[in-house]
Amino acid sequence: MEDYNERQFYNLQRSSLSMKKRGLGSVVAIIILALIAIILVSIFLGAYLGNVKKNTSGDSSSCLGIDIGVTNCYIFDDRLNNYLPLGQQVTGYTILMDVERAPGGREIGGLRFVVKNIEGNENLFEPMNISALNFNANTDYKNFIEYSSVSAVVRGLEKEPQSVAVSAVVGESQTICEPVNAAIECVGFPYLY
Image (cartoon, rainbow, N blue to C red; front, top):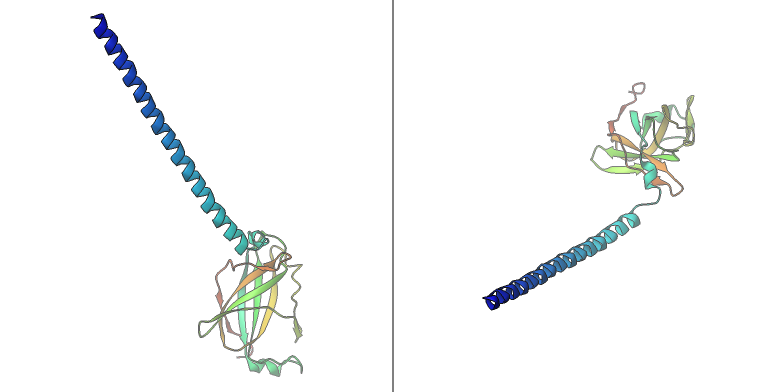
């Protein structure tokens, strides 16, 4: 009987050892699979972040918090030439806009205007300095601080403008931010029409 008990004990120990080995093997397999998954995720993440960093400028984070928007947009056509001195005559359409700045963001180095014409095409325009008829629009935006507004003029538009949105220009690299406010409709200037 003792021989029988010893054999059972021996078999029990052997099966317990083999179970431990199988359990240990599955734990090792799970750890290896987890490590492979971590390595693959880090490779894809590294490639993605490298692409994102390469496709954005260093100043794009400066765009965060800048809240500017066009509040008025007036269209002038060739009839404006009747009021302008020689040398400042207009070819094509001109738009006059009032731009307001809400709180937040860094210093703005310039403005760009996304103008949509009546054919549905959008183009980016830079404003210009103009001084005529007791009116002055300056492109120096260093004093364009929170809770303030400026006037801006874009001229030489070939097609009649329909709407306009404004973008801030920030940083040393002159990064053009995306417009944060919706475009507004441009209307004819009431005193000329």
